[in-house]
Image (cartoon, rainbow, N blue to C red; front, side):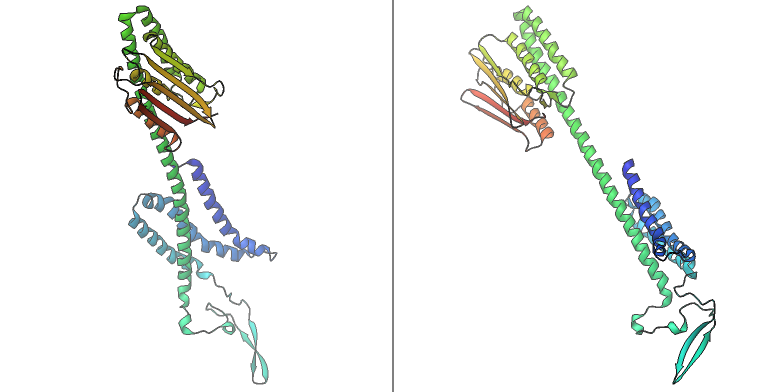
Length: 380
């Protein structure tokens, strides 16, 4: 698929080059004060076969053969076109002679010993310079005169085809790079959507399990949990599809999730959250931070003893720092993982969103705690 603007620009370049070539003789005669139209017409007629070669090469041979990787066929057809050009151009330019034949008798003065006399030269039916203007040179340095038009045509044809191929390949390379970038962005977008789609079933499965546990214990709490879940679903449906979300809305989503978890767990679980009072308008990709909180509730709650989940968020030098610390115990509902579907998914999303060197996710497990530290850039 060729970009329309690029196609127009390319053809404007061609038009400008050929326009310059066609006005060269007019520009030269402008300094003399008068234009010799016969010479200009002969120049244009001599240039016409090369313009024909350009049109044939640019709009037929290159797109149909060179760009389709039929290189041998392209070279053969190009050489065949040049061959016919060499036949056509000398025939067209046959009447062009750099030494115009005298229309009138010319008088040359010659000296014969001490006498000076005049010799009248009649117009010659043959082409070439006047007899008096004939120059001699070493035979080894001279080409047969009949080769002149062919050698000139060969050189011009090589220049026309070479410049044409170079410009076409340049614009094709630019277009291919644009298409490759668009394909990479599309693949990146699809992969991000796939990873984000994995979050929703995983997240709602854990939440529904919590509500299911509440139904047999406390029906009222289960009803409150359903209301809190509806708030979370509203965010996932209407906000999470965006590329970026404000930090304020992401914090609100986290607090709704924490509120849902408070309904299930007793006071034996200490939950503390600290958020920055400023920069709430800053933007981050949605559903990044919830993975760390969800991981803490799933793996950091002890069945028999006391547990704690502490989270702290801050903004420094255009980066969001988010730290989650939770209890790590063999009596927890699940053992604390250094990796897992949630964290592995998060790492993949972070790498796709920010690149390998533009984010930092560190996890530590020991001394009865599990710590996750996240550092990502933000949009202000």
